[in-house]
Length: 309
Image (tube, rainbow, N blue to C red):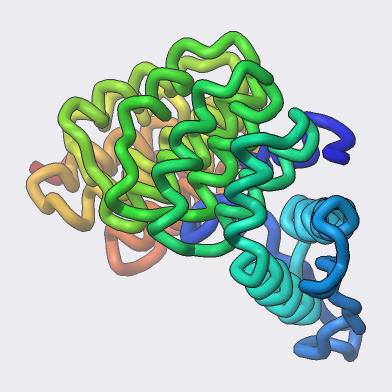
């Protein structure tokens, strides 16, 4: 049913609630169809259909959802996406009890679909069973469980079993989905002791998606101790990672005014070394911190940053 692991590895530009990552997937528009949703026939089957057929249809809806999430989105696509998400949510809520049973007793493929569908319910009552699926013997189910926990996005979700996989799991897609889950849960207000240190460690992950999500989450936490490590990512070869790091430094500076100078010097200092595709993100954050633009010349920004305490 789930055709490939990458179908649901949602680090690629789809971090819900993250202005850093969402900015990378905005469409250019200008088609004359802005704001008009594409016709959409809900994928999930009606309640009276057999559960197996329901799972097949729901899986098709999930794949369509993933395609839209991973692609560039303008107003038209956003409208279509909202309609699709509402359809998936409604179908999952309607079949919640069957999904819980399927997660407990179904085949591995059925458990993969069931656990992601349970994430769409938004129901705190499913958190326990979904968390339990992190110990599923099927690796693909574990991978999809991290995705489900991110979609569910409940602040009360225990983070430690997710961060264990974030740091140590051998499968890169599982680490990507774990990073997504942590980002979503922290965005909703979830916290745990030592999370900032875990996220700093994840900044050196070989997978760009993990680095980007970890950097973005550190910006939400607003922890000044992470400034130096975030600064190293400003010259990351993947533009999305560099953009996440620069946005997080900007957020830390704005939430901790005593850290303004340190963040500004990291941003300004990187202008001499950053890849061309990442320069605009640095200039944007520096302008946000200064309140006005000093242009694109690194020397002007570096002189301004040096004068800050």
